Image 1 (cartoon, one colour):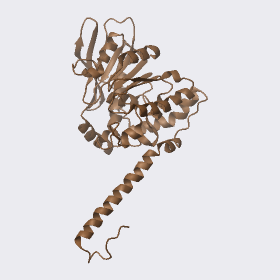
Image 2: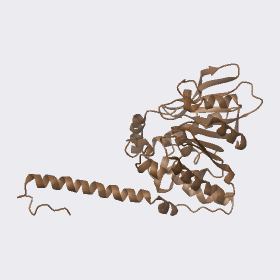
Image 3: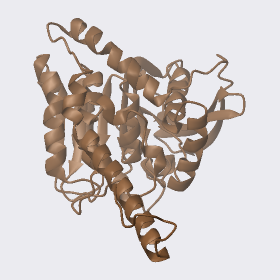
Image 4: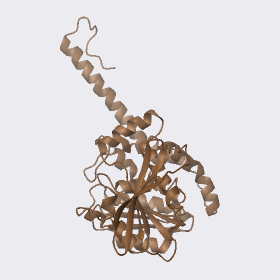
Length: 358
């Protein structure tokens, strides 16, 4: 204990004030140091929760099912009480080759899931569907190339439609401050904002997979930035998604969330509370979340010039993720697209991956 005086009744005020400030500093730093050591002990902690069985794919899936359920619990994925989707649709765009419309379905009374559903005109049969997810401060219009400033998306959703796919572009809340406000309310009720938004994606899939134009056995998800976040969070719990592409999000999650460093942006000092999912770093770094995707094919897109990450750390985390696939004898289903660009989609690489696996 810090002692600057024997009797506070007789001590000068400046010593009492100094002791108060010094003890507070010591208290804060002890908490910080202890918590950082807990966070940085991820590998030892994770080992207590993961017991994969690589004797067969079926055995592997059974062995990681408890982890999948704990991830679902961490998100607090919302289960809609009403099976009635009550869908509505509205025009969005159309030309000689493709058509898109806004779709709304009910998640709960007063809560609606919205997306743009687009497809080629006059397809010869049911189409593979790609969920194309936008990033923070963006919209479905960005992934579709309807906003001229969205070069980092390269209109990838519209290009997918022109290349023969149906797409579903969900709308999510994009203001970081308001996301944190909503997340505080969610946590009071025992779930997270991301859990609600994953439920919206699943609800939209309920609608999309019932459409005659869509092949329900050929579903993929491809998101940039916050869209990469949702691809990372959703694929482990939404087993209808058969292929995933994570662009400009996959990371060394311990460092990205909690270790400040000039080489990349760290969430810890930013005040974006919604990103701190309770229990995330107990056992679910990005490699382990991808272990829940296995054996489904997954591609990670990472730009060496992307300021939100430091690419050697991404490579390190990816190697750990790929080890789960390699141990199952399917390393070719886990791919890293490491490019020289920044925070952006790499369309040709993603399209090739989809054509190979979807």
